[in-house]
Length: 93
Image (cartoon, rainbow, N blue to C red; front, side):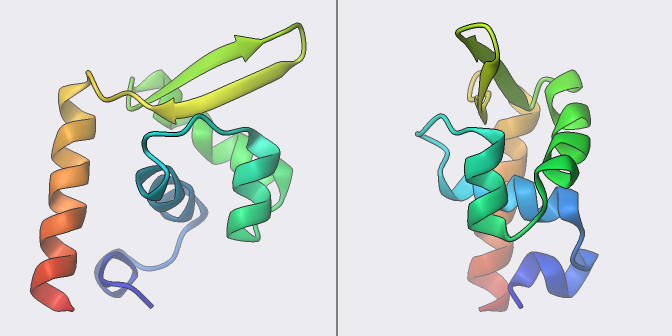
């Protein structure tokens, strides 16, 4: 259990967000996130939607049916989340 889970509990959205933070410089797919996190494809799709709507995650189409996802590094909230995640891990680990 990492520091974020100790404080906020383990949720699918937190799991997806931590995966995106870990891979912040790489675009990924729903299936890639699902495989890496152990969540179902439908769970990842459900919890990533609010992150996209808030601007924290960028969604880019790749062809007609494939979508890629990546943290939106130009979003101020994204920067604050990454900074918080880094600092809380330093303090509690």
